[in-house]
Length: 331
Ligand SMILES: Nc1ncnc2c1ncn2[C@@H]1O[C@H](COP(=O)(O)OP(=O)(O)OP(=O)(O)O)[C@@H](O)[C@H]1O
Ligand SMILES: [Mg+2]
Image (tube, rainbow, N blue to C red; front, side):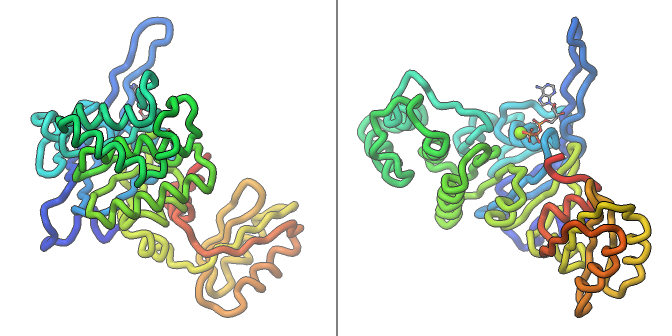
């Protein structure tokens, strides 16, 4: 595993989230739609430090929601131990729930209530008195830019507004740890950026955030550390910068070719600075570093194979995922 550790340094304070040997196997089902058991999480170890924004980055079905489900006491683990703010999620679920806020992958707003009532009732549920709950609901509307929609039905909210309301609800009772499962899935770019700002504000106020995403830019932009997960396992865990540098390349050249890429790949491997040339759907992905003029040499080598297009980028977390699995995040 590529890692400077799934654990923070030894002198770090007690972790906000500690996941040890977590496994979750969903049992199979019988009947006309019979299915075998599914191993959704297959031995995950992770620690998240207080105040950290930590990302679980992985493709569909990687086990992100299941991991969050166990941390938030919704799903019982098959094996392993998870502690949140020092409390065991299996033996102490009620106290864990009081310390956390959760935004699930699906809208959990109360559709019988308007925007303000959703917040007010949530505060009451978390044992605030009527006056305190009213003030907190008003304050949250301001913080999350929803004041103008206070009396609106939840049905009347845009996707971005609904997501802001879910986040407002999740932090209403001042949780120490916040779990956000795909917080920006389906949002337009502007709403996504506005949500990123809110997450940054929460971090600044000291909240620990565990978020899941399959958007590599999101993990890169928001997270102090990222665990790349696939098939229920952690493939790499580190800060985004070192993860990208672990590839040993500073340039990614995507070649779209009309002809056979094999001879080009062989030629490319002889060029100093080229570390790999892997086939893609329409050509080759070349990883290179350092050497001056390497892109020009790559282009020259590709010309005989009918070079249709060429793009040059820096490595991203997506490149790291591809290097680890041989697949794109969204395949
Ligand atoms: N209740 C369930 N019963 C059976 N299998 C399940 C159940 N929930 C999830 N799975 C399976 O477990 C695996 C992991 O699912 P999970 O929802 O944790 O992935 P994910 O990383 O959150 O994916 P996505 O990006 O699509 O949200 C998948 O193969 C999924 O089909
Ligand atoms: Mg999910």
